Length: 107
Length: 423
Image (cartoon, rainbow over all chains, first blue to last red; front, side, top):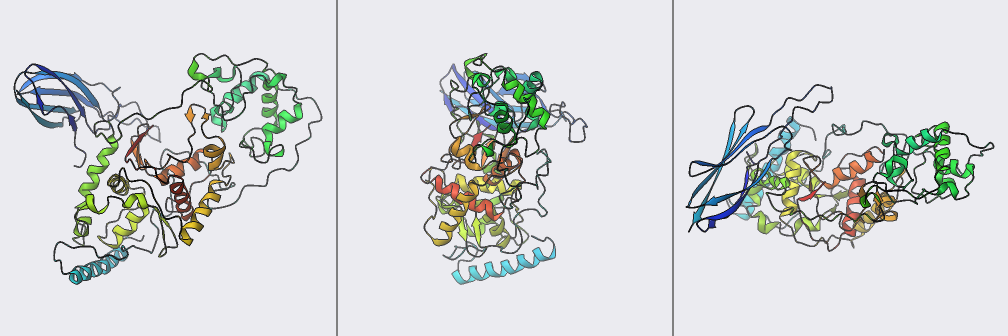
């Protein structure tokens, strides 16, 4: 699939540094409030959960509700104490979990 | 273009041609493109036929009025209508009509009008009418200005609200009655509502940042399409294996007159016809694939100043035609491109800033945040038409080619920055 999640975080950081992480996921985030041209409601289909883990431990967790706009953009901070891997997971209403990973070197 | 067997036959012909090219240059699997005309499918249209308006766009049929491809608008009246009795109308109803956005306007799109519409973000394309009631205007003048302003000013931008069927005579009477009550300056709730004080918008978003601009996903999509092998086992990559180097400036030289088709070709139509004639890929204009490829081909030429051929005889003629088309009044609202982007440039139409043509082309195709979609320049032309109540043409219409060439000539020197990001 061409449209991959976008991640933006530093490749390196100092121990104890607070880094900024940005993520963008391609997703329709259909709220369930819209109607099609025949007046029938378009069923809800959103990402309802976003999890950021570092070396297996949850760092940032969010529950998303239907008011979040399409292509959800998440921007948050994390404190890094050691090198490792950030793993991002987005859970769709249909149960599918989209994931992405990025490593960071901490000195 | 017809699908099915004709497609297969043409693909085989193209394959033979392409194979001959490979043999001739003796490069084997990694082909080099010889310096010759790029193959183009010259038969058929480059977009769906019959052309169907996009879903979600107003479904109005405006065939009674001019389009950029057809003249139909009835002639303007030469004389104002005689008003023999003083106008009686319901001023309150008139105030409502002046603010009603479902009737083609509202009037507030162009005029500040005292308390009408709560003085909520009115435009300033046209004079402030807040004190028109004390201006000493006759009822006949007020009536006819709304009914058809062309009888007083043949160059007017104002739509002919009466003669083009927007409002009945009684409704215009109501609006005249309302105008006659306007005798003091508008009171704005905030400074932003006052078009004279409202600061023009500046686009500050980083359009090439993939985190900021969802339109950048089109680049990824195009890179996938680039190496995608068609039924003929060819992909773009077969001949163009280094797009970054090969297309560093190409898009900035488009659009261009194409003698084989006797029209101006923009990037999108070029993609359709070139893909069809080489790999056999079926990428009609206004498909996701075509838009992604157009974004990519422009993106590869980012930072290159737009510089098109304006000196060859066919280019000169096309630019002249494009200029005339930009001045043609179209649609039920009877407006020309130059009405907004010439006479009214650097003014507010309701809450939207009208820009000059220079700067309106270098960021296309653009991501549109309000629609979550990539729009190319042809779709933008089409929306302008439909929005002023004129029927749009198919995206590959030759008139749009002439118009695009003229617009590109007005953007000479502007650096490409694609995909753009806009509302």
